[in-house]
Amino acid sequence: MDGRTSMGDLIPQAAELWQLAGVTKPIILASSSPRRAAILRAVGCPFKVVPPSVQESEYGSWDGGELLRRRAVQKAESVKAEFSAYSVLAADTIVKLDDRVFGKPQDHQEAASILRSLSGRVHEVWTAMCFIPATSGIGNTVVSRTAVTLRPLSSSEINAYVMTGEPLDKAGAYGIQGIGGLWIQSIEGCYFNVVGLPLSQLWDLIKSV
Image (cartoon, rainbow, N blue to C red; front, side):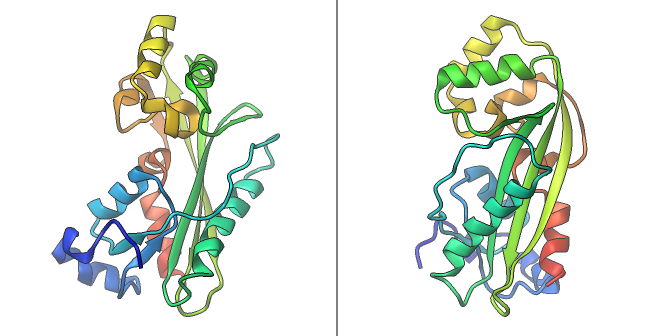
């Protein structure tokens, strides 16, 4: 099995903790996001990375999170089909402003447009997670929401930030854990949800199966 993270890279003392949640061998993280991998690594969760073979489509109007949930399930199932002996975790994150939904920008121009829309506004970050255990093959899902207030940004700030390249692979065109964190005035809810993997909900999700 291909993977970019090994048990030896993780916090040794955390192995017993994750066993309490039923994690006795590496989970497959069905995601190409380095932020999600970094979160799991930071808390000592044993995992391997296998990107899903699912083509991400454009979001239409907001449907209360059902499409988000389905996309997380599709990602998990696409990897589970190949690695049936392993538990699989997948997630999908979007940014919502009023009834508009923002995923990852396609280019610098779209990133700047998204940031202009979010500037000085309160928006919501939604993440759906799907966890399919090795034992049953039936996935459980959870959807999490965090409200984020972005301070007003000048055109020069937006342009300079976009040119760093940081916004281009992130839903909503900013990274709270990076340069984008300079402009976050406040959040209401889980910080890790904004990064892309809400930890408290993840723990409950894994334990529930």
